[in-house]
Image (cartoon, rainbow, N blue to C red; front, side, top):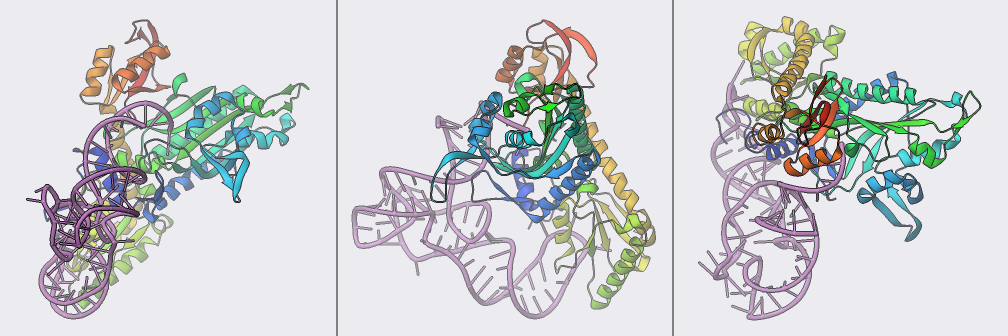
Length: 485
RNA sequence: CGGGGUGUGGCGCAGUCUGGCAGCGCGCAUGCUUUGGGAGCAUGAGGUCGCGGGUUCGAAUCCCGCCGCCCCGACCA
């Protein structure tokens, strides 16, 4: 085994980002490949990270008035095909059940690629009056989309997600709901996963099939590529009309309600890996880390072991003395392995803090505290550490966010000409704010020629008139171009 | 679907060109010694060499067919 220190046997991030990503996901045991093409097995450590973000998002969803529900996995073909743009967009990706019970089915069943169609059909009897609105529902489930190329967490044939579906009496209210959904995603991404996001509107060519318009949050990975992290759609009256949902409004006129839908997926586990990770493996934000502090006991003789164990017990008791301390997720690694082995093991898994407690520390009533993100090492008295740990975890969380934000900002560039965009994409890569006229033809030309897409029209980009970098026509504002996953 | 690569104990690979006992490293089990950056030694378990056919006294190796997976593209959360 190589002894130059720290985790080895992972492809270096700078050499081959994709190879690095695969190594980390597999070796940190977040997930594994499965017998089914494009499908993944989420292992306990990866699932714990998902559960963490899931729990936080569920709190936001409930706090904004939504209720969890469940709808079936199977969508009858006739329902999926009611909304014309929707069927056209999703048909190539749908997996169909054609046989069941030993015979061919009269009507094929789609395995849901998303649930707009079956929900719209199902709720039409629930909505009779404006008093039945808004209807605010959320589903935690799995969906299947037959993608051509898959990648662990980022794009799998089956994935886990949350899909919210809402119906409103007015367009204004539905539009507010789209913003509410997107804000839930911003909060979970930034405050829980320490991933800074850019909120914006998708161009028409990138919007959800069947929606009037789509908002998204966009994030930058450490290879400077973009990842769409969550989407919120204004469905308008499209699905309601297709399914025949009508309500009697207070003016005694029958109307179609306005719908929204928004989704957030297991992809965010991959995003967490790709935003914070380094050559030694995962770097997890404390909020989402299954283990926040790992204690590695060090000893030779039995009496040393006993003394170390006693010191650790006292530390844990002191930590549990406050509510914040009690909430800290601590693991003591008593396995019969060498300390070095354990250091590497937990670094690969991104545990924010490691405490080394050995005979020398016991004698000084202290622990060596090592911070995963920068490997800084400091001797801290045990009593002080028990009192400070919650605050240190909070600071660590903020540090990761600040680091990611700084990285994104230093890799975001304003360009005015198409040539500058091309040079930038081929050079450093990153996000490019550039003037665009709004014409889909110019958008497509950039995509065809550079592989970059308009990630979104950011809400916070200032109105800044200019000339479209492709055709030279008037441009109202800059939009965000990047290569994306 | 187009281009490239690859299938050999759990993982990573050698062996294939030139047919002749299925090997190496890691991991795993047991024991002893170890333990402050992936410990050492000893003993041991674990394989229909991707699948099907063919050639041959004999096939991981040669021939034919099929399948899986990975990477790059088109598609996408």
